[in-house]
Length: 403
Image 1 (cartoon, rainbow, N blue to C red):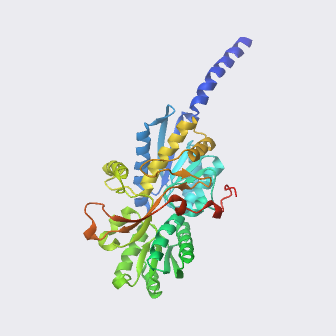
Image 2 (image 1 turned 180 degrees about the vertical axis):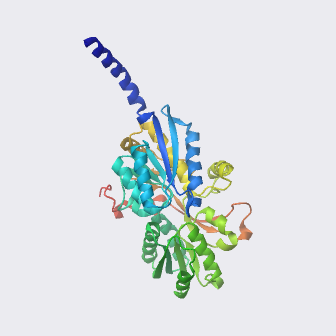
Image 3 (image 1 turned 135 degrees about the vertical axis):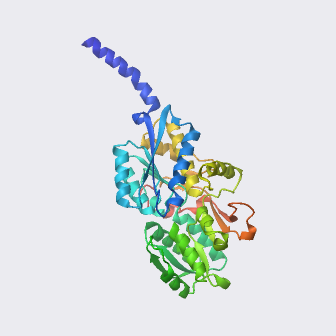
């Protein structure tokens, strides 16, 4: 018996360092993409998000610390209860280490709380609510591509500087829309503008007629659409049909615009829209190289959600490699420690509140006559440095921020 015990101890001593060296739980790193595969936000996430994450895994080599990287996908159907149940199942039963994308801010807010509860990781790219790194921050989540505060800082300030100082909000009635209206209203007022009114519309409404009539009657210089998805596209088309912009009467501000929205609307409808974005495929040689590869798989150009999903997944895998483990707390610390320098961001960094800080860009949608080739949609108006784009920590309500 004593000899057997010594053999067991020797085996354990031999196995211990090997396990510590790899540190991969269950011998697999599992990434779950929880996204909208079929609903109104699917063109902003869905198959594009899946493609971007899988591209990152393939480019990384399919393994980290000698262990396989597994990617699984689920459609949350834009229902909080579905997303929460799936996240718990993945973390508890499926042994998922990180959940990616999380389009729809209500869902992102719910799932990041689950990640904290289960001591796992969630990286948000699709959703925009700045609450994710403000009052609802967690030590287990990262908000990567953009947020409503940055969108407001870019588009709001750009239009105020041009003299568009009275605003009316047409706001999607869910967490993202509310946050976008609040953040943009604060920017407008802080820069000498006024908010003359607002109205909220259901995110699944097909008809904006009554809402647009009220926006038109407000006489505001800017009708700001604080929403996203197919309803945003329909709202812009309806605003054009109602003649809101004829003769310069009113200007439409798209507070969250994806390049796929522009492609869907066409330049005749979208021309002149001012928008803020974290990524544009035609920005430089690096963005064009990634976008060409993405286009070959998706037959469309990537937007900032796609680019963010790729970049954040790559950063996550590099952090595991550097940390020597997939332990959530250790990997999160390593992700905050390591800067990001890739096609998406230069000298990007993750703050203690989970906010990934990087430059943002203010664009204007080109006229049809200005576009020279396919997907040539934007002209750059301003670069907003990361430290100016995102909420300063001095104003943060995140309990993780030391003041």
